[in-house]
Image (cartoon, rainbow over all chains, first blue to last red):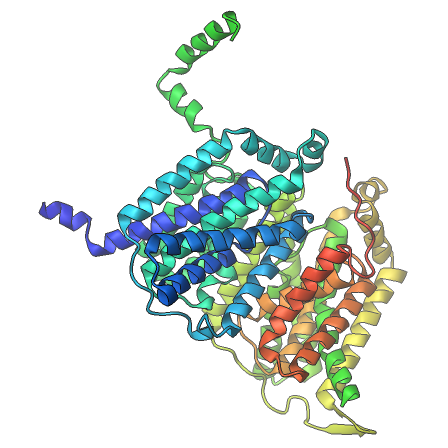
Length: 303
Length: 291
């Protein structure tokens, strides 16, 4: 049991919670940017909305933690839709800048509002987030993302990423789909923000600036745009790396910047982008032939 | 009072316009938001600062030095981070640009430290001229005159030189221009050099005006200048000038109304509104969707 205590010590548990929170948020951004191809530079704003909403619910009303989480996620989702309606008519670069502007506006408003504690932030927020809850939510979000990816909705999103005009011509209501993707992504960010608030117990508008959005974007880009295992990998690597590289902390952003450029030049789809895991596993274990035969059998039987 | 604020707004707006021109020119030619432009502005401010301190240079010499240094930097950035991506998706190019901007800001922070520094006092004499009821400081006069001269110079280059003609042709139709024997790479390098030089001039002027130069000043100034470029209609050179001045006026009126903590939000709210109401800006050409 002692060795178990060594592995699951406080420090490691905290890192594990951090990883979980970032996985949830990065998967949300992956749906927006990786799957739907809409570059959003304001993901941290949704995170801050979730964090502040849930923290305020906890601190002002004393409602149970579950409700605080839910209200954080919902608040972010509502803002996702509000932002979605007008801005998603824009595409490409304009959307990126509009989301960036949205992020900055949210930050300025948080600094200037009284109920949010202004630049001082909010504390103490009750500590409620634990490893179990975080990782159960991670599982739920991962499963939900898989369900989305393999549904009619998910394929419509992919079609929008590949060619928006063609998708529209095929009868996909692109604006509606983009808003839905934005709302789901925002809900994930809000959930992550709510967990973060009840984990760190202190939130401050500075924590949710442009750089935080970039950090989350980096996870998606490094892991693989549009790939769920890739995004999870990216979130794990970029959460653990700064911890192990504490001594080069100030070089971290230098590395981040250079990495973004190099990834785009040499591997624009990220480490695992475009890798189909099911197929990879089947291939490795030589199961694809079996599956192929089954498929042929289906076809013969006319299914 | 009103005219005084108007003058302050125009002074600030002229500096924003200088930066906005770089965004507009690059966007006009390769339809890329050069995210690193704000950082080039910041580097320009630092180079100007270094020159005034180290060589005790005259302000105009520092200005020229900063412009030259940033010209080189702009060309290098384009070579390293944008040229390899010219045929890939616009999302990739934009992310690469964000990478460059983070890299440059962090690099300067590592070299100089995160704190802000000041230009030496009295680099421009504190003289104040009175015109009727309006007070014009020498600094404001320098800012307006330098900006106006630079913009005039840019107009002359774009309108009356051979490379300016090539720039306009490339902006109109990239592929056709290259078929007509225009060296696209040279035109793009030249555009980056021009835009970066203007940003550097803006950096030195804004650095003296606010008397604070820091490694992270590029982000917010760059975003504001971009808002100005979008407001005027991205891709349009007169639009960038108009947008810059309007943004400067909006900001000064916010400060005059005692809401100075909201100035950043104002720039972005304007950006938002423009994007919603007229996405091509005040003087922009309509965007055509290609099928």
